[in-house]
Image (cartoon, rainbow, N blue to C red; front, side, top):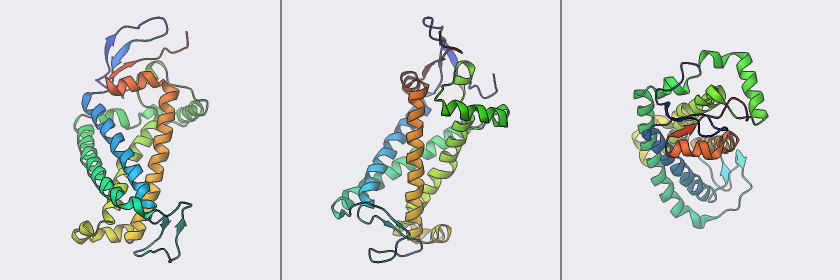
Length: 246
């Protein structure tokens, strides 16, 4: 077993029946709480963000952009100005919930060692042979079994690190760049993103990548056993799938 096995993986039940392995305590309460708060906040951001986007479904590059200006990306969406008000208010509220929850999550994964222990790929996982096998398993929709089910696979770890350390920070900062009040205090954000409209475009593209990540994440939950994985993220208890089907 690799060194990435978490000390939280404490056996709590022996194998229950011929088809199940032992049950372990996999996820601590703080991880489960921040996960669900983050999921709820992101879904609210997605719905409210679409409402805001419908007011101007055209994306520009630079500082300015308007309906009669040439767009960098034209989205095939109907214009709807009626949804903008509630969309902006809800988006702003959910964004700050996401930021506060995200900062708490980041501090906790650093302080607890969860980042190093569970999210950084192990040495054996970055070999070409191992990665090729993982890609094949994903394409065949095969779930992890036995000891391998006790750690995230390399593709999961790369995806989680990309989301936590790159996509979410870029999404938050690009969103803040669209706020006149925030850019008054931190005008350097215009330099970072190349203007308010560029920040809006980057915000949309990053949000699209996060939606893609969410879709793949949900698919993998069903491949890996939705009931077992959902239970582990609600109660912390995870039943290890046997090495082979019985």
